[in-house]
View (tube, rainbow, N blue to C red):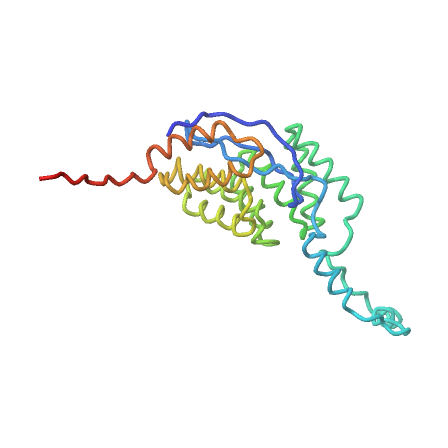
Length: 261
């Protein structure tokens, strides 16, 4: 099926994943459809993860009030022992780190990849448990045509959260660009296992099944899931669906007519 070769501009919108990604990058194959990357809220740098924070809050609420005596940390401090390390999932984000992250995002929007790489690289060294800088650094590397570095950054992001939907969507695109179509399919499926309503993973999986794996009947379901999530249907995808349904929709069985003698 023919697909227009186009590059979509950078877009931004709020979702719950807490990293910034570019709206689309052009597929390497000539005439192929453009994959989409989720535009999500750039304000959240990394931990605290909302789900982890909710679990922590629920656990804390179930603990009875402590007796009026020195805490273990206070006793440890009196003995000269170091305090326990802060839990990165509940620790507040330092103001300097958020400011550096905001500068990196502004550089990405301006296509200033070198400056963004510098800011994000330092953040990944200073805050290795924060997924946002790792994921955005992978995007920067891919825009700089450094796929091996992009993959390494994505691997670090997925080591923090292997089920992260946006990171798996990004990995799927990177694998697709490398011609590893079956691995790309598994990455998109992981994204959808985490978030079955993740529209852009449906879109990208549909493109993979349709254009690269030539499994048009399966692509129909992915495109339909993508379309159903939109306030206004995507006219381009609607055209693809018409073509796919024409070619892959099950044929209506013909009923033989009885003839009289």
